[in-house]
Amino acid sequence: GASRVMDWIETEPAIDAKKVAVVGQSRLAKVAVITAAFDTRFGLCCPNDGGCKTLSLVPNLMFPHWFAPGLRAWTEIGKSGLSSAETAKLRGEKPPLPFDQSSLVGCIAPRVVHFGASSHDVYAPPDLPFATLRDAAPVWRLFGKTNVPPDARLLDFEPFFGDLSWHCKFGPHSINRTDWRHYMESARRAFCR
Image (tube, rainbow, N blue to C red; front, side):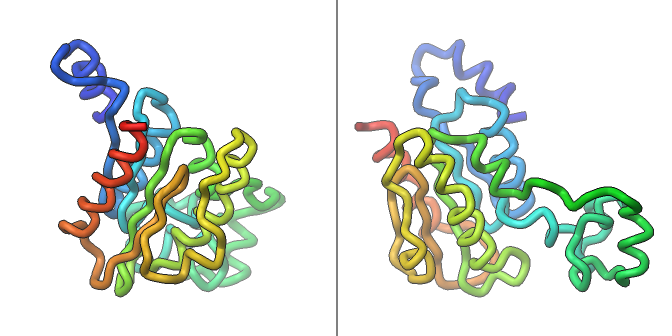
């Protein structure tokens, strides 16, 4: 969907197509990450309360209907609702997956990614995007991007703006004015250099 909108934006002379962001909330945050990974025309990706680590935690008991049954074989035991024996039976001789959500986020480099989280989010707790940022940061460094948040900065409520940006607002699983204010600041920094 977003890529088709971008196709149109590129035909509209009133819009600078080099200064477009893709934003998503919750499951659409994952869609925003996938869109930016596959469509390099988006200069900024803003996943909010989702789109984060880890593939092995995603197909959980809260929303099993969101995922194909075979994907449950790759979840962490205890998070999937399956016993060790059931998981082993589904996996068979297959090795563990050699990648995680941070690998997908790394496909967006060297463009700017800004993760937003919520302090009281029970669906995408803030520690998951923290881990995704930490694990994806080496890819930005490979591109010579050094303005990535240090691990120590990830656990506080101060926003970090850089090549990988971050903020965590106080509150539940939602997107609100605080998130939009931070995303607009990331856009200003990314596109008005």
